[in-house]
Length: 343
Image 1 (cartoon, rainbow, N blue to C red):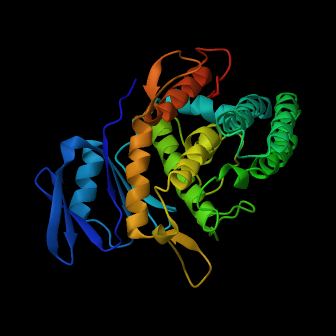
Image 2 (cartoon, rainbow, N blue to C red):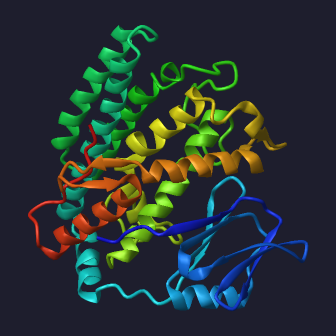
């Protein structure tokens, strides 16, 4: 299984990246402020619009180093990469599966059942850890409704009805999300999910985490030879990594949502780390992104036992494990795609 190497995050928008020998050089207004050997890196992710030199882009492409450009709010803009060496037979089979409504439904049902299962256990963890600080009846009822939603998703007869079940379950889950915020309530309150752009502090953190996790899933899918742009539940759209969006569904609650709750409840992120723009969008400040990404890297290093593989791995490896299992299913090595079901 592929091991994660180091990622270099450039969080300030006024940094320019260039190449010097085998090193990436970070410049600010023409002055070098740092350099990192390329052989230590798997990915370079920059937040802003200053850019990178063509020489560095070419070197990253030749060395298999992913160079990702994100907006200041964490929205994916572009990625520079070299030749994709995926298995052409695997991709042809993936495309046939994507055109087969029965295959799409089989995979999508597993993905959504896992998403709802993980959402339910996020709620159950809060019940277990903080019973004196929450409305236990409200949480128990929410957990029961999500269990019924899982049964409904398992028996969904088509993709549209599955999407409807998932949407209703998401409303149930997010109805108690504000109750899981136990600290900094004046600055971090949650009424509903909003995006493009996020308009409050909590949604800004969620959107940023989802963007990072989706990027991880896209890289994982490419690493195993799958096309991240051809999904089974998310429909094709130019520039949209539909399969990465499919895969990230399983990881939203256990990886992203719980991480955001930890940032708030442990006061790793405070209101000073976010700012509101004139258009109403809320984004992280430079210092806020730095604190977020530092904690995110640590989170990726945390170990867990994979529920299907029964092996210990880091959270950062989970997208690769799931991409590998999906590729094995598409190849016909296993009978069904085993989604990530965390507990």
